[in-house]
Amino acid sequence: MPFKEYEKYDALGLAELVHKKKVKPVEIVDEAIARAEALNPKLNAIVFDVFEQARTAAKGKVSKGIFAGVPMFLKDMRGIAKGMPTRSGSRMAPAIVSDHDSTLVARYRAAGLIPLGKTNVPEFGILPTTESKLYGPAHNPWNLAHTPGGSSGGSAATVSARIVPIAHSTDGGGSIRIPASNNGLIGLKVSRGRITQGPDNADSTSGLSVDNVVTRSVRDTAAALDLASPYNYGDPYFAPAAEGSYLEGIKRKPKRLRIAVAMTDLKGKAFHPDVTAAVKKAAKICEDLGHFVEEKSPDIDADMMTMAFMTLWAANSAFAVESLSRMTGVQPSMDVLEGITYSLYQQGRNITAIQLMGMQQVMYRIGRTTAAFHETYDLWLTPTLSAPPLKLGTVNVDETDLQKAFDPLTGYVPFTATQNATGQPAINVPLYWNKQDLPIGVQFVARHGNEMLLLKLAAELEKAAPWANRKPKLA
Image 1 (cartoon, rainbow, N blue to C red):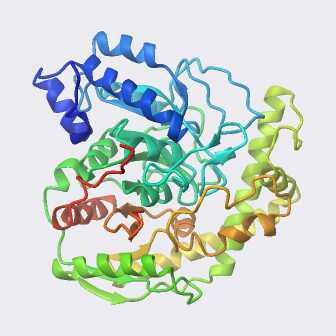
Image 2 (cartoon, rainbow, N blue to C red):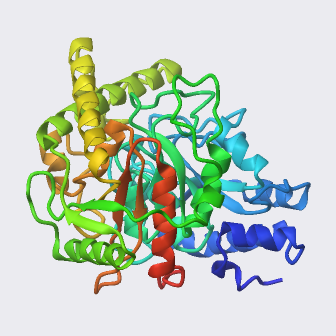
């Protein structure tokens, strides 16, 4: 039957229909596929599909897990799934299908989620916009001329456009939170060590990058974290144990919180007026809920932070390219890599072990600084980005001069990489849309290991300023 009510439900809502036998999994999957086929020609968010396999899975014995029969997409980075390729948005990576699932994807399937395919990413997840030479640009459902963000831009676009209610994402410098901000979604960057990257990875990008999902509801994010976060004892380290179920935890209001708010970036520069308005709105809602809010930011040297982060990023880019070259026999060149990637690769090859260790120590010291900050403040409220979603074409991916390449992005991503450096959790919450109807998110940052507090506050904000009925015209 036509399932016109589909878009009204989050992932848990769809699963409840399945559990109550009001709808069959194949009906849900068919609706998601129909939406994908209708909308993806405009969005270019989906780059590989397994629609027939998904239909077969939905007609078979579907898990009775918490997300029974719910369709999802996997990001074309670390979303390793049997029968699907993972190319990380690069022409250098061959389209070789995997013979196994990652531990996380196996957990998704066990919970009843049904993967439909892979989503668009920038090459190696480097940029906060999704427009690689391999796949072409992904478009924002709220305005097709704008980026859905990066690097989980394709995943966020599929959720925002109501194709699926949940999609796998990764975050190495803001790559969950940035697309969540640009698409009006919940995007939780988890603590370092919270979600396993096994069996193929363990400490991606020197600990900067983590996996999770983007969703439209706080409860979907909480339930996804419950199923994703059990320890995997081959991992090099673990995040502090959770305070029980996240899904149950969000039913309890947080205590009254001390919230610091950033009204400028770490160098004292003001944000775009729309962004300032978004932050002020979030702060006002928090105050109205009884939380204490004051303007304050941790004392972080932004230039040192950027230098340390980019050193690790360049070194890991070089490692990724070299590893791929050894596996495929393809030599790195501008014929198979974008200019930005090739230059990062060249830069990374020249970084010494001593330099790398030194920059890691810088990041560890920043972690000490933020830990001390959270002795006073429960949360830090910042904008996720300093400006509304960029227009596509703002960044020239073939620019080999890295300074010129990143010039259009100077100051655009002022905060998110800090949490990747420190390992802290942070969540994007969609509370504001500007006059052009573009979403502008804010993020809340917590002490390492305290995803529960972030989710509790996000659930409280969701009730105080609901966003569930906001959707792009394209949806």
